Amino acid sequence: MHKFSIRKKLHLQLLWESSLPSNGLHNLYSLEELVIMKCPKLQCCSTEHLPPQLRKLTVENCRELTTIVDLQSLKSLEVLVIRNCPVQFAPDEHLPSSLHSLTVTDCKNLQFFPLVDSHELQFGQDKSLQLMLQNVHISSCGKLKEVAGLQYLTSLKSLELKKCPLLQIIPDERLLSRPQHVEVTDCPRLREWCKRHQFHYSQVLSVLHPKNLC
Image (cartoon, rainbow, N blue to C red; front, side):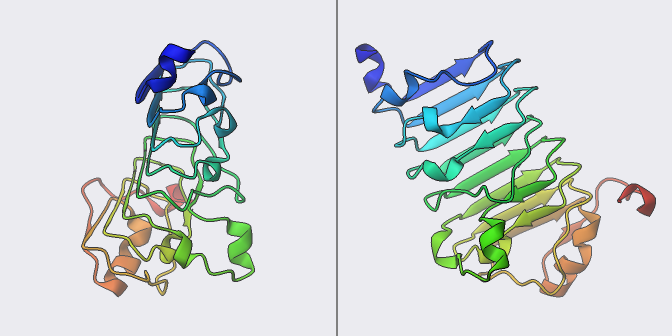
């Protein structure tokens, strides 16, 4: 592993295991970017096996991947991309405070995405100083109903929410900072929220019948 310890970027592709290797990855001391893609048997991605200094993580096209755990342990992570994976998240999961950019797209089974620990939010703990997210892009997640902690993003510059027909935000819920760029498209349950806070809303696809939005 000594030769690989100076790698800056690594692609893991066509891994035929149900979980990430339990040894080796954390020894890549200089690794800053990791791409995990097209791993047809991968079911669980645990960050305990990843180098803690990782700055960018991309996980895409892993058709069996249902679990990504302990993202908050990646204290240096700045960019997270999750694309075309059937992942789901528990309420006690949350993102690392170092994260600047989040992209989640084509995750068909995703119903809930926690930016912060939802259990802590229930007890009124203020997480606003711990979230540095500047760019959030979430699209084509047909079952997504909630993004927990969106209102706590004090550094948000760009927000894009697209093609998430079940996604809801309470109309009175105001963002702590007004992003420079907001794009909400084909999220019919966000229409009133956009109107209330003067965000542009567009409907490109035909609106689903209400009985299909349950």
